[in-house]
Image (cartoon, rainbow, N blue to C red):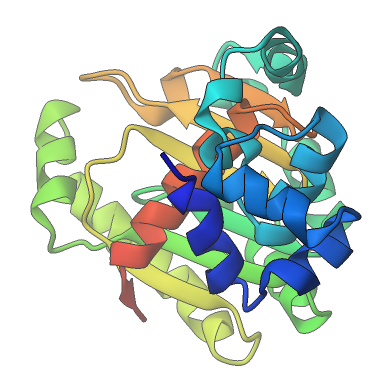
Length: 245
């Protein structure tokens, strides 16, 4: 069988065999064998190809998902486990925002702690956006069934939707002027995600518990690792279905 994922990724990137092979540093026939004969390239070429195409190497070559080096890289991505979201102090959040140079991606339902517990967070975020950092804000649609259900599950009923509305009011003044991208989602949320360049904080949700009481995984992207890309791919799937504000 042929590697249609690789073929499609090359096409989607606006490349052909010649241009792609030049960027990876191999000849076109080698790339052709990767596609038509399902050859798996050596790790350096695999990671280079994945970076060029904006895909994980595990997606392009699923057989590599469980190899020893990939497992080791994935385990190394987990830097720290916070016992709860509240264990992360305000200075850490502000430092993550201030140090970001390329991308900040936020995913939650209300994320009200961002404006309630972190002084100046909204203004700092807007400042990074005005200075060229791509900021994507992905928060809950107050009218969605998913937000209503989460409120009932946590025992706060309509308060969850009210929190979403409040957060949108806090961000509304800076979304347009600061050029932040913002969307409302109504998906079932299994983890809140806060990404700052190559650092990602994943806050998994537990049934009936507030996200603030659940642990947070501090993940640093490592080439060949799967954990960072696993959560970032989840973010992108929600973003693709959300409604622009």
